[in-house]
Image (cartoon, rainbow, N blue to C red):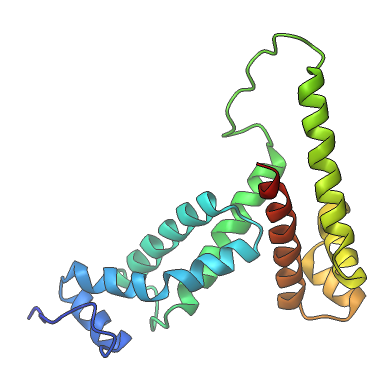
Length: 190
């Protein structure tokens, strides 16, 4: 029996939408995705993925969760938790594969016309570096420490949390906040 109702209505519970999705209403699954997608993307951004990769991984996670649910591999479907967990596994796997083979999946670098950068390129790079350095210096010392451990030294978030006395989630949040500040500094330039 196919349940028919307005999927955009926020009054519908996840359980009602899930029941409708099980009955074959694709709009119900789409409504669940729309309802929880932001949380999944935020979790992926906290893992260190860019927005494009986060969207791709998120889509894969939703598909896998639905397939696992249809196959009976999931006892219950608690949204968005199960999707966030699946997405984090996929994100970590993607990042691990990229570290193992950094050139895999990346576009080939075009041949440079000259082995030395132009004066304009060198100046633009120096200015960008200066902006980023100043933006980092404006951050509190504790945030700088966390960011340097994560990005300069490649220390795992869990280890940083242990060293500086923060929760792992707070470490991820600090790294994300500093990245946003640095990105904003670079965007001011253009």
